[in-house]
Length: 108
Image (cartoon, rainbow, N blue to C red):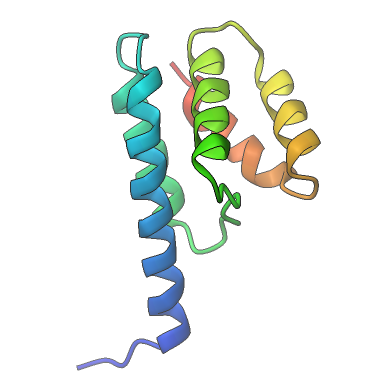
C-alpha cells in the first residue's frame, strides 16, 4: 500500500469542499441550458489538477458573484478576457486560475 502525504490529502479535501460549495452555489444561477453540466465538469477538472490555484471564494456572496460571472461567460454575455479581468480585479494574482476557468466554461 502506498503512502499519500498528509499535505496532499488536506489539499485534495480542501479542493473537494470548495468544489462542492461552488457547485451548490451555481445552481441558483443555472438558467442557460447545459450550464450545470459545464460547471460540474469545470469543478471536477480543477479539483483533479494539483497545479490549479483555488480561487478563495470565502463567502456566499463571493460564490454567487463567481457563479453569475461564470454564467455570463457561458451565455456569451461577456468574453473570456472580460471574465478574467473581472476576476483578477476582485482577486489579484489569480490570473491563471481565472484563465483556466474561462477556457473550461467558454469551450462550447
